[in-house]
Image (cartoon, rainbow, N blue to C red):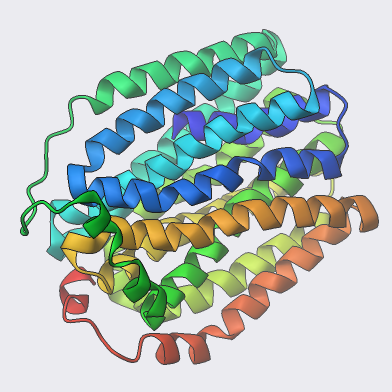
Length: 378
């Protein structure tokens, strides 16, 4: 997550540094999810068949390769290739870690996913701030070299993860893919997918709109990194207390409140203008809300799936995340180029508000059949 935080700011800043416009930048950012999305099912099947550790080892290897490719790339298609490597790494990472975290203790999956999200957010904060400072003071070559080194350290750390036992006997690889039709027909997985799309959108908006907007206001790389880092502070506290928050409000109300308030927060960004203190406060609020959405959608997927199929369930829901990673940056890059960055925030805010308002109808319909695992997971 240190690397994720670093690349979320380095990729758009590096693209702007090379002279690409906001629409081209949207395509570059979106390219990471094209191949990565297709690999999520493969990663889920591998998790269910061989264990999550193998997937994590592959993830960190692709991370190192992507960072090295960015360090030597300056053309449009070379940047897309480098971003694709990073996208594959992320797709493998999310599937493996969410599956692993939800299986450590089934009765405390909400708490454990929240803590995992909190520690990950702390890493994102460190990566975002450090990336802005290193790029602004030492240059992008040093920044990408640092990312490659961090990926190598992550690979070494993942080698120490213990093996989690499974209740059922090991199945063939194709048998691990067998639950896909059942998951596709599950309305509860549709709800999880909707939540994953919204959570993915909340993350990518910070990359495609917030970073260019802060640069357009005349801020340096270090200032942009610092402001974005503050947005992650709230996510750390949210992650630590996530289990209690879910127990207090329930998943349905959390989706309702979080999406609506997130939309209002985005709509406020253009009114803040060049006031860094006010912008920092807005970023803190936005980061806190994203800190809820991050662990909430895998919790919903865990609630309505069996432990033996957890990897595939997380992977299937991750497809919705991947779709948002492709559609949202490309779409909002074009929107921002057409109507302007300020107006794009109002459009994004309206989408989140509408997405929250339909939750009271969508949640009961899609989760009408309760899974026996739900009380324990919640």
